[in-house]
Length: 296
Image 1 (cartoon, rainbow, N blue to C red):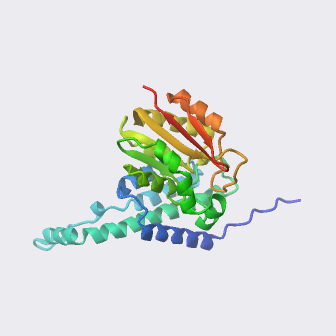
Image 2 (cartoon, rainbow, N blue to C red):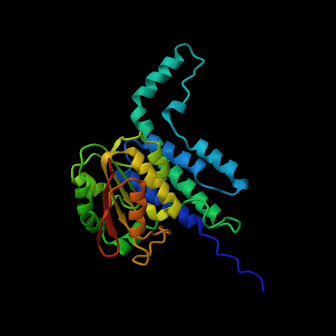
Image 3 (cartoon, rainbow, N blue to C red):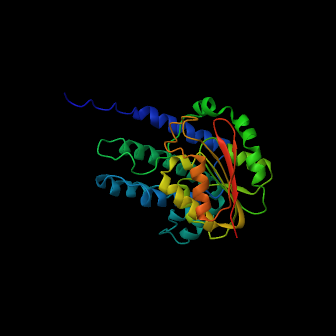
C-alpha cells in the first residue's frame, strides 16, 4: 500500500493570517525603534542558523538580500546639474515617511520569509529538526491557552519586579508582548528583541546588559541551543546581572508554536553550569517563573 501524502498547507490562508498580524503590530506601534539593527540580526540568523535543503539555500539568500530595506540603498545620483543635492534635500524632507514605509516592508518581509521557511521545512525531504521556525499561533488562540493579555501581564508582574535593576534590559519573547509591557510598567529601560535570540544576543557588546528577560522563546530551541543561549547570556550580562524567564514545563500546556518545552530543573542546571547562581523557581500553574543572578 502506498504512503498517504501529507495534506498541503493552505498557502493563501497562511499569507492572509501573516499579513493581518504584521498590520496589527504596525498599527499598535509594537515594533521597536531600533528595528533596522534587529532585523539585520534576524536576516543574519536566517542565513547562518537555519539549515534548508541545498536546492533552496541560494534562493533564500537572494530573498534575504532583497529584504534588507534601508534608506541608504536609495540612489541619489542624477544627471541634472545640482540634481544630487536636490534629491538629497527632498530625501531629508520625506525621511520620516520613507522610514515608516520601509519599517512596514521589513515587518512584512519577516513574515513572508518565515512563511517560506515553514513551507520548505514541511517538504518530505526536510528533516524535522532542521532549523528553528518562528511562526506563531493566532492571538485569539493564545488567549485561550494563556488567558487575556492583561491577565498574563498581571501574572508576569512578579517576574518583572525581580528584574528591576538600573540599566538596559533585553526582552526576548514571542506572542503579544506581555513581558515587555510588564517590565515597562515597572519603569524599566526594556528593549524588545526580534528573531533568533542567539543571533540577537551575539550581536550585543559583552557586559552591556543589566538584565535579560525571556518568554515563549526557549521552548522554540532544541536543548543544545538553550545551552548556547545560556553561555551567551553569561557573556552579555554585567556581573550581578539578572536573568528571568517564564517557561512551560513539559505536559503542562500544549502550545503548537513551542515544540521544545524543557523541564525547569534542566533550565536551572544549564544556567548554573554557565555561571549563574542557583535559580529561584515559582510554579504559576500552566507555566513557571525562573529568576537568577550572574555570579561574579
